[in-house]
Length: 450
Figure 1 (cartoon, rainbow, N blue to C red):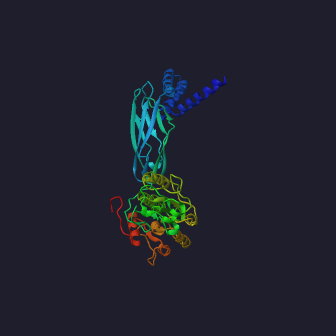
Figure 2: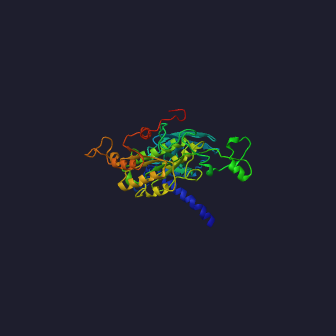
Figure 3: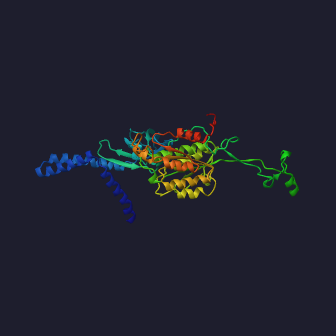
């Protein structure tokens, strides 16, 4: 008895769901049938009772037939591509396959998408033969970066008279990642990038003096001019000086995410410009062979694939860039009061090249930012003027003609930064070239282009 009851409960629940799926037409027919039956009783008209029963029976029969319908269909979704820059379209392909031996009726296919990606797509599929398949597609687009779930896919079943509709969902879903837009930067050498062999790389010398030699054992084919005779006499075998070992140039991209430092919101806000600037800079440096670390004002570093806290360039730069862009796709504003946490991370060692994207800086935070320069080989700062971004291009300026960011830039420059203001409408490639010109560094050729 208990087993029968447990099996009957889902059946009753499914029937209730089917009754709840009555459309406006189905409810109207049911109400008209009940009204006709009541009127036939009051007026004593038997023919009216027959009409009422027919009107009421039709939607109920449709509910029962639709509830008993068992379609065996398989659905899949394909994103092309699964990672897109902001304001770029992605195509979503839906595939339905009838795996049963019976044809289906008319199916309404609907995919659940967030409102920011556009309207919810709906497709009507005609009768699908046994073993047949149908493919449809739609496009999604978002001006805001982030990760957006797609699905689950839903099938809406309807009877031929339109009396009842049932919705059945698949369980699988996918995620569309909208990353910041990456602008190609000009191939100019910023201050701190080493010239010569291995463009953009540093070299550790084989020796700094006779007492600092770290020799190794002689190998067949080594040049005898590299034999270190003092070590040979000490160890009793031929020892040679080590060759210069190239080291991968390092860079830290600092992104200021403080909420108070970036007024405004939306895809054209100062914060979104800073995020896109950090993404463009990091990808550019990865392509040039740098080992890049992304750091925020909270002091958190983005770990690389090796878990070492940096994304290595070279042959895996494309994968590293993808991981970094995925991280920047979901970065949000922080409630951090200042830049002290980031400074504590930077002062732990020499960070090589430092590229920073700052929001509004008060005097105290400008001093903290100035100290960061002491632990880096070179530093370039892009400082966004919050007042200009809030008022927009051509907005009101202070009466003395000075923008609020001017004195902060002066403090950074005195500390050794190459600091540039960022106004609404400014282009990062132009600012990147201007930063190189301020340092007096020559233009170089990278990847066959100047």
